[in-house]
Length: 266
Image (cartoon, rainbow, N blue to C red; front, top):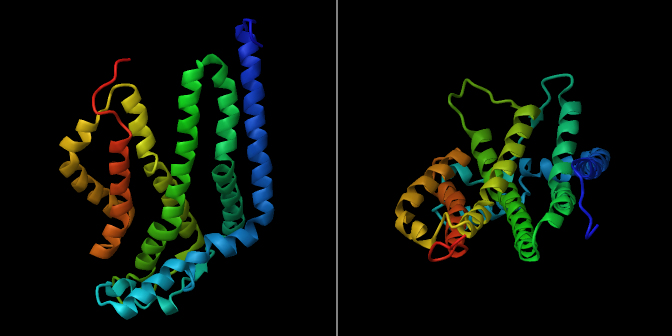
């Protein structure tokens, strides 16, 4: 309360209460996710395995009207991926893992808001306004990254990897475990990559980053971002590479607009 000094044990008790509420939110969301996961699995997680996925319909439309689309990505109308459960416990573990991931993604803003309630009393009002804006912007960018990974990056990678053939004598079997690992890894990586503007803004507020940095190293950044785009998606064709590179480069340009022209005094 205002006007009262909290002891170390008071702070510790408040922190324990905050962590308990955050854990309770996660558990509730995980249980709810577990209950609806069979429907979510078919409608969302496994949707990129079928030809009616939005990106595949778009690629099929482009391939019928333009010769620019690489052959590896054309002919999506009959594309499908059949998953195989190789271990006895694979489906149950995938159910548990997917439920925890879904609880984390959905509950992330709520959990951060609960933790924010513990930190905010120690900040000035101007600091609280800045952190509040960063909180909203960071969550927005994270979900933009998740959507980019789901609707663009992962389907492109799945389309390439599932149809790639080293030799006709080798028959590919896509396991449920490998599919889930790549799916959630790409979702997490792209969500983190889309936090680049927030990181730039924070470094700019601390006086560690200015707009001149982005102007000076733009050509270097283009090369590095092309390499990152190539690592995120394994396809080697220019279409896929630039489909991933363009949103990442847009993040670079957005970051340059969020930092001051000159270093600020702190």
